[in-house]
Length: 418
Image 1 (cartoon, rainbow, N blue to C red):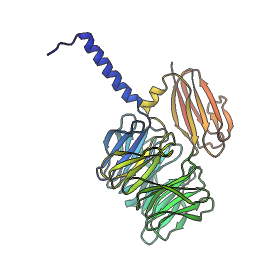
Image 2: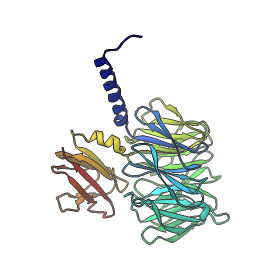
Image 3: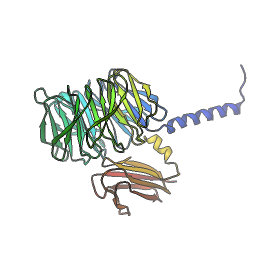
Image 4: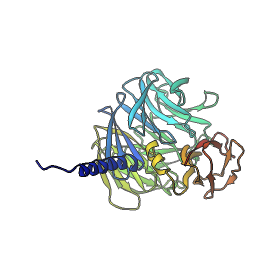
């Protein structure tokens, strides 16, 4: 055996520690994929496209939502009675929240305060208070399947799969009551609001088209023709085109949100189920239930990558904000941190900087917004789309603020000592 000098051993240990610290903090935004048959969630670094961890969760993960600040990942177990809450910093289950029999779709309000759960087996929508991690209210809805919250935070639309009475059920989020029901001829699958809230995209079982609802009037617009079995349709902020996962041909179909005309299609894996957009808006992450992998689609036309995951991946969700560990490393000094305003929310809703560092707010939304600090410090009353506002924080403390135009949009800056 060759003896290794003591100082060399120290250098090796220091290098190893440095490498592990780099791995802990250098990872970019992560993608979380629910493997339905394994009852696990695969955690993927979207920068390296490598699986970082596999997390056991409640049986039958059938819904995944990431909190607006990127710190918590909520996973519903449709074969159980609980929602698993994953801490995105450690990628371990922080707690299990009992909600009722067979929870399926999830949706979060833009401020991250409430998580709505479609408790299919108990015929109700449960409201989880994310501050107390418990159910604080419920609204009766027959056989709820999926949920979409309007970007303005006023209403939620719920896909009700009650046999013989298929419908969209509209819930007033402040009053916690049903205010409308829109009958459907076929069973509803998924429903999503476009980023600007002007259209609700709905897929129906057995219908090769995406239904489009004007939520201002609850009137149907011309549908978007697709191939067999469209599942999720969405128009993400920053994308000129909308996107649809079409399960039959195994593709993602692009469409024009204004004319609803279909455009080019992009082949992915077998039986694609869900999709989400990368934090930088350049790639689509598509879960393929039939091929046990995730397709990473470069929207600029670059090569498509495939990431193997677990058995029967269904939902996929991508962080828009870094987790706590990543954010801490990024805030260790240097340039101003950026808060994007999109989908009527501040992203991230909570950010940590050091004294002497700045924060820049950028309005990436289609509506005007503003920044108003609770302590009366000068902000910016009106930020038109594309405009920015920067503030440098000189002293440690906690600074709560809201949108000066939409008071329900709230967020926080925490300033640490340098």
